[in-house]
Each structure stands twice: as structure tokens, then as C-alpha cells.
Image (cartoon, rainbow, N blue to C red; front, side, top):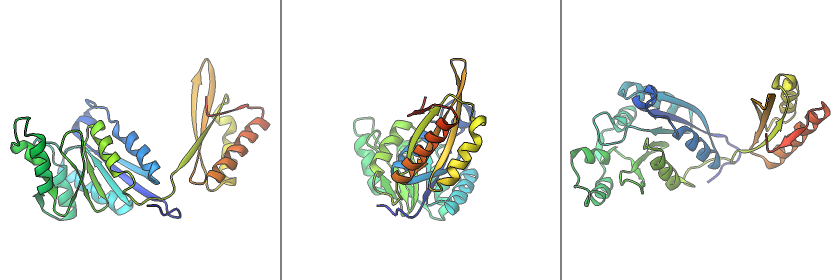
Amino acid sequence: MTSPDKIWTAGLIVIGDEILSGRTQDKNIAQIASWLQVQGIRLAEVRVVPDVEARIVAALNALRADYDYVFTTGGIGPTHDDITVDAVAAALGVPVVIHPEARALLERYYATRGGLNEGRLRMARVPEGAELIPNRMSGAPGIRIGNLFVMAGVPHITAGMLDALTGQLEGGAPLLSETIGCWVAESEVADLLRETEAAHPACQIGSYPFFREGRVGANFVIRSVSPEDLRSCCEALAGALAAQGHAPTPGGI
């Protein structure tokens, strides 16, 4: 489902004291951003918030007002500090209920794993009116309510939920990119980059400097939703670099 003329955007809320404390290193931002690009949706903002309901609610309401989609990761497990569902329900002004399909899924999953106890049943709680996002890994589903997606914090479980959502969201044309590398200080070609981008308004150029082998260089990443505009911009940038005596390296260094 695509709407090529519209730029679709998403916000992401990463929830968890363990992320903020440094005990756990987040991997979901990168995989969600990459997945969204393939869907034709741009990740425009990320917030990392603690396991505090009021902070989660505030972040949800702020991002819901600004973006087409909002994703959350973390805080949907079986313990007392897994409060994401409660926060989402509070933000939307709806009660929390036990989803019958989620309960049935958990009952089947835990039938040979000690049964469904009170803690595990917490993972069947959803804001009223929510749909489920399948989870093939651990039985506990994610949650979709409107354009809000509540997902696990464990990266491989999140990956499975994203796979289940592939092709289900309306988006624009996927963002394409090409890289050109060059052994040059980015400060020396700053004007060249700015002028090239200005001449190709359908493209954006990002500059990523590095220091290797005792030399300074940079990789320039050109992005566009249009293959034709992307190719034109890449050719113009490579030509301009070469004209100044800086040999471009297609694909990056």
C-alpha cells in the first residue's frame, strides 16, 4: 500500500530503565528504522523513556500528534514493571482488557511450560479495541491499535513482529541510497556538497567523515525516493569531486 506523493513518518519510543542505565544496549532503533525505510516510511524521531507511566504517556501523546505512526519497544512482559500497556491505554483514554485470542495463544504456548500463571496472563492484556501482532518466538503477541504499534524489547522478537507487519502499513516510495567515498576532508568540499544538494532538491546528501591509514576521508550518502534523481545527483557529485582533483569511490570507502 503506497502513496508515492506523501512522505510518511514514524516516531519510536524505546521504553526501559535498563536502556537508560546502560545495562542493555538497544538494537531496535536500527532494525526498525531500516524496516520502515523499506515500507516507505521515515523514522523521524526516537525517544528513550524510563519505566514511568506518566513519562510514557507524555511521549506517546507528543509523537502521536506529529507522526503518521508511532512504535514502542519494551515493557510488555510478565513483571510488575512492564507497564507499557497501561500507559498506552491511559494515553488513548481506554480501559485495559484481557484479549481472548492473546489468552488462547498463551495458554497453548505455556501448556508444556508450566501453565498460564498470573504473571504470564499479564501478556494477554491490551488496550480495549486493540488487534494483535503475531509473535512466533515466545507466544506473547504485540499490539496494534490504530496507527500505534506496541512491540517487544527483545530484538529478535521485535524482528519477528516487524516481519508479520511487512506490507501491512500504508507508506510512500521507499527511500533509496547510494554512497560515494573520497579521500578528502569534508570541510574542503562543504560548499560542493551544499551546491550539489541544492541543485537536486529531490535528494539529500549526508557526509560521514573518517580517519584511516593515517588519512582523512569521508563517505557521502545520497538519498532519494526517485531512482532517476538519485542517479543524477550521484553522477553530479562524482563529477564535481573529480573536477576538484578528488577521486570518487563508488560504493564508499
